[in-house]
Length: 139
Image (cartoon, rainbow, N blue to C red; front, side, top):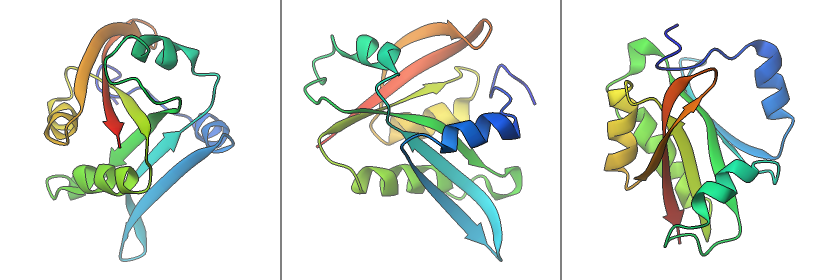
């Protein structure tokens, strides 16, 4: 896995992420998980709050982070990422959703931008990899 595109997540890291307050949506096909999105909220993410507090859109107190969004390679190109974003957004109100996206992951970045997310900034994260911080207010 190219960490410039997506950082490695061990089973332990995923279990830890699932232990926090989150909203996870899975897409199944023929009883196989083919895609999922994990949206997290916890106050420990002060970095996200500090980054977003100076934006004109930051009028909501709750900031959620897309911790991980994956679509299995053989199922890409069918709009699953956009549909999962839409479903997540339709189940939340008066919040901001943000995500960290590799600038090299053009498919994912294009999906976020097509769904109305804005680029806030670019940062070095996860051991020096470039990530764009994207966000969208949900009314």
